[in-house]
Length: 267
Ligand code: NAD
Image 1 (cartoon, rainbow, N blue to C red):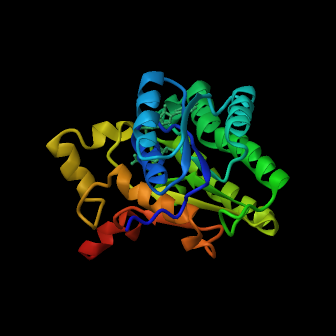
Image 2: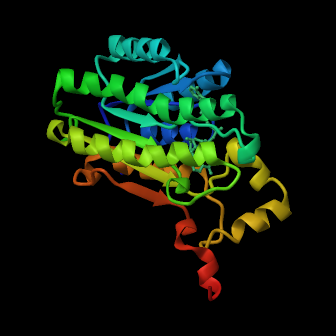
């Protein structure tokens, strides 16, 4: 029998028309949730993914919003709640990199990465949490709501040449933990997933040649690059009552990347 722990729940995944977000949206849909596929560009891809998820017997919507724009985020949540009544699960996945040596990093590169990766998470979470508190508990879950933040191993691993990205993910860590502390009395569970290297367009240069992949694999004790399905499965668990006592945690899904692999060879 298929395990569908999210039946009757409404989920929104930001940046869900590519990579990890797409994998998470598909996994939540397969677990029985209705899913909003948020996108900012490539509407046709978002519509196709939404249609394919809906073929599994759930409802889906493809909604455009730039997560770093307050008015667009508010409009997206209004549209979702007017169609489906409320939101049960938010996955803050949208993110990007604009890499540069620190001395060459422009303010635009800094602001864009912080704006999407951190401010976007603030804006989307605030809308979702306001709605979860407004409507209170529902019989579909033990929790009043679930928020999952897509962090990164770079919430703990410093990353030269990527100061803006690492700062944004370090920010996600204490954003998530502070919210978890504040929202626990409402029974809104807040957790993060910290992926290691997952094969998506964001890091194509790190895996699309045999030499690049071989170099990447030296950082991954488990010996393979991750795929979006690895993160999708973790997201379903964190969104479901199977993890009802897990709160304020970062789940590292990284093939051991945070185990200081160089010490595995003697240090
Ligand atoms: P990706 O480039 O395939 O997907 C990123 C998604 O975010 C895209 O759909 C993009 O359109 C969307 N997006 C960007 N700016 C947006 C905005 N302003 N509003 C709405 N959506 C926006 O990359 P990915 O690897 O799937 O990354 C997803 C998340 O996972 C990111 O937060 C990233 O930092 C994180 N992550 C990825 C890896 C990895 O190895 N791939 C590792 C750790 C963390």
